[in-house]
Picture 1 (cartoon, rainbow, N blue to C red):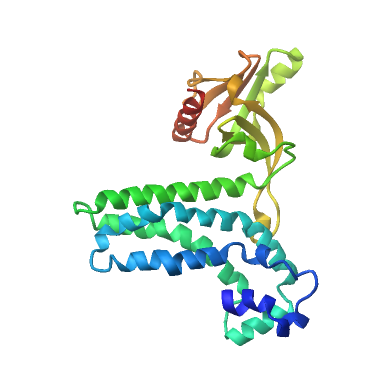
Picture 2: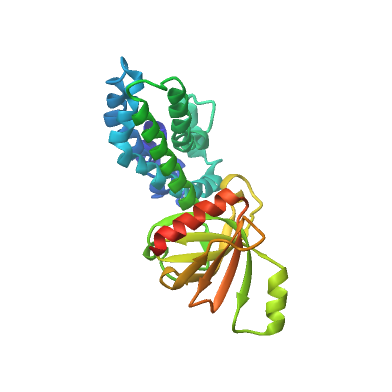
Length: 293
């Protein structure tokens, strides 16, 4: 892909096949695939080869390189832009010619999906290895490596949702790290406001997608798109946010193990949040508690 497609975009002999709108779009189409390639080629593969005789110790190899794995997050974040560009130009003569020269049965988009598939595969491989390494020397490292890779997958997944937020005025990066995101039923009960509104609000929940950052929690409305691939990915229209400095929580709402309360400005605004399961509720309550303390 790097030689047969990316490099060819800079090849003067191929220039006449590239439409003007596609020129200078190499970085969008391939993201940081080259960086991922060099990481594997120069660093990770060589490290792995050191463990050929001691496969059960391979967890250490992952742990030593864990920071480098974050390059995948960058790749995945760029993926929707890359896919949308590919859809515009997938039938371009340039891509057909590159594919013919390479004698590839599959078109470029199948290869551009590889890094995304790869990062999700590591956790399966590590799980398998753990299964057969119960009481041996490297088991703890394998477990830690698995936990770290799952952490990176969660960060990748969360950031894929975060880039789909629309209508937020400020800069999301200023809200600190994205800790959690997920869909909930939300009831509101505000002290201010019309009593009629309060009564209505109490019965009918709103479906909201919450994004918990270190400095704020965002409430968004999820919109499903009808399309292919990432086009089908939902987008989230921003509704409002609460500054974590003024937030409080009530962990138990009577009568429902899946509900908790987030309140704002000394209960001036109260949001009753219903999680899909008690486990999801517990995870969120723990994360919010960490932020508040």
